[in-house]
Image 1 (tube, rainbow, N blue to C red):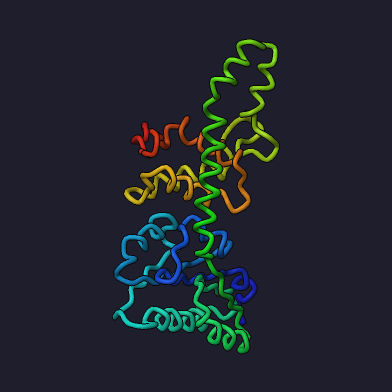
Image 2: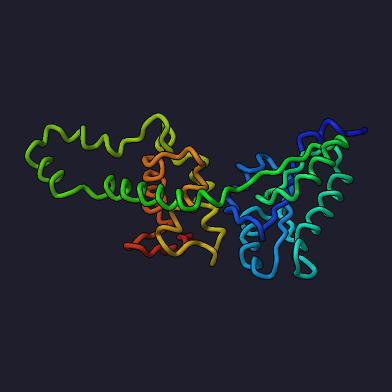
Length: 251
């Protein structure tokens, strides 16, 4: 097939937004390097679907279901998967859903020689994520605001100031680059929050969950704290207790 070598690298992702609601920023991790994303949604996901269009632009195609009903969205997605597979036979197709009902269709497509897989977004991680966010939130507060005891200790032993500074000094795996500038990942995250507009989280816990998802599953508490510091110091976000606001950009 002419040009098939170029098509091999194409990745098309189809998201069942009724079944799972992954953050738009996480789509690159679920389907790395995707060329197009088909976002299937019902009437209750109308607002959420727009965040994908806002964040990934022309790569996103929103597909509202024509009529609600049991498995209506599943059939829409299955139809489009067949369409994309026929149009791009050498592409890799990723169905983002926890619904195992897609497995027979995927297995059949694989038996016909197509490269298709299902990628779940584990909803059970939400409770664990809240706990992890709470733990990291406490760590961020501890790193950003020294306790009275630590302040008193610094005043009593000024010679140990370098050790105190090491709390916020970037490690080898920290977000800033060697020259002190923001890493490309941080700049992308800052831009992503800017593009979210009205969809930006207004509560601190929700903001931290979004930020953690953007940083990736392996992000440490220190990395999360450094990212928060970068966004607040850069005027991207402003955090007051549990409230998060987004100052207008200075041009």
